[in-house]
Image 1 (cartoon, one colour):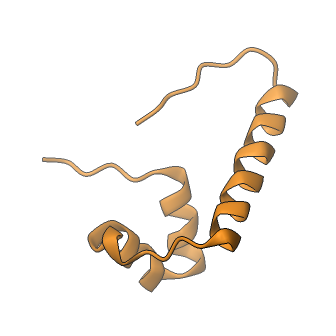
Image 2: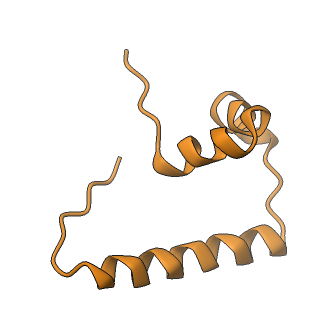
Image 3: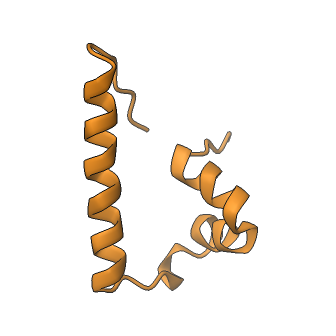
Length: 62
């Protein structure tokens, strides 16, 4: 079976290959605290603003 990679995992691989490996192979080891949640929310908001800049689009989820 082919494993697909998400945009966030691709970017994380460039920033921290070990962190990307852990996220892909041992996702239960992730630490989710208030700072992590705040960063994820900020990223979601930035994504929404960016999508709004380009007009109509087709969002592909995986």
